[in-house]
Structure formats: structure tokens, C-alpha cells
Image (tube, rainbow, N blue to C red; front, side, top):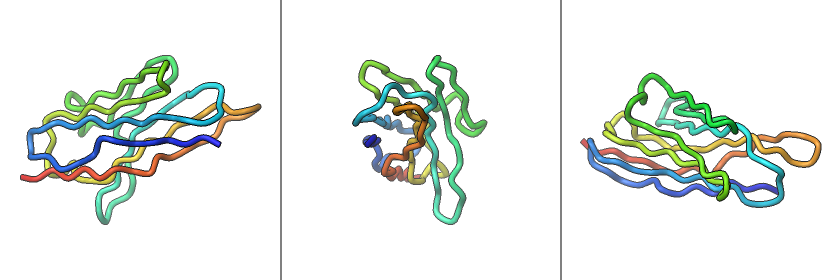
Length: 119
């Protein structure tokens, strides 16, 4: 079984910064693509940023230049650094990882962490 443990959410004033962590634990061979998603109240879950096993990254237009996704493969951990936060970034943030387990790949979700940005 694979688990994704998230940490790093919280309450911050507009213009502030936070860093999320998503750490994979359990039995698996490797981690492929990892994405950070968010879901604001009354809205659908949307992709914020993603990184592949090769290190490629992509970002939603709304966060380009402010958010940075990175990974530390030795720790099976992916980070999302969020700078210049805005009230509209308030949401629950989730990580999603495609993990290689025996003979196949599976998707796993983290438990989600709340980010609240006050104006």
C-alpha cells in the first residue's frame, strides 16, 4: 500500500508564502508524475502544477511565476512553494502521484491541506 502524506498548509496574509510537501511512503518502485491540485469552495478541483519523473514541469496560467513545484527523489517528496499568495488562492490543496507498483501504475491522492489567504 502507498500513502501520500501532505503538510504545509495554513493561514497566511496576502503576499505571503507557504510551502507544501507531499511525501510518498509504502511499497513501490518509483514515482512518475506528481501533480498539485486545489479545490476552492463551490468549485471543481483544478490542476495547479505538475512534475514528471524526468523533471519537466507545467503550471496553471494563474500561478506561473509565483508557484514552484520541485521534487526530491531521494526522499520521495514533492514540494509546492507558493509565493505572492492572493485571497483567491484559498482552497484545499491535494497532491496526486502516479506510482509504479508491481507490474502496473496506480494513482494516489494525498489527504489535502487547507490554505487560507487573508486580505
